Image (cartoon, rainbow, N blue to C red; front, side):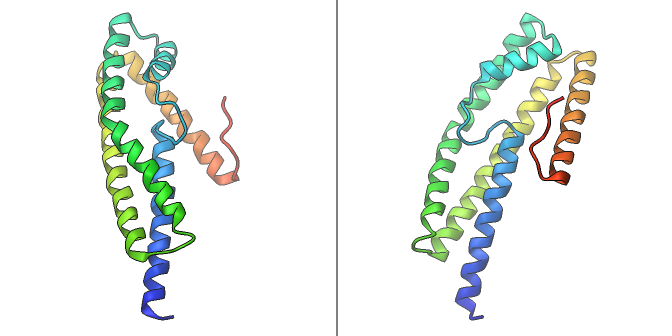
Length: 158
């Protein structure tokens, strides 16, 4: 196989892997494409499950709003990059694909960092009992996702 074809295939493979990683990260973080990034809905879910006080709800709402606003430009740019990468199927350009894949990686890293930071901020607002309950919820979520991966189907809500 000649070097340019090998580079092109590696670039396409990297782009595909990057998009899969992004999709997994975004889905895991509640940032998946096509989803309305409504912090109010997320707050209502958290408040209901963890019995947050009104003060906690207000603080969590501020954190989620700040995160949503901070990531808005990145979400928009990812949408554009997905379109650009999708268009590569007709006229593949290894350089353009690699540049787009690199940018996807950079944006993904920022989004994962921001999501981790946000989760930590919210976690710090919880009481020890709420933290324990959140830890239990997260463990169950990880177990469902592990079963889903093993069996190749959608995770089952319990």
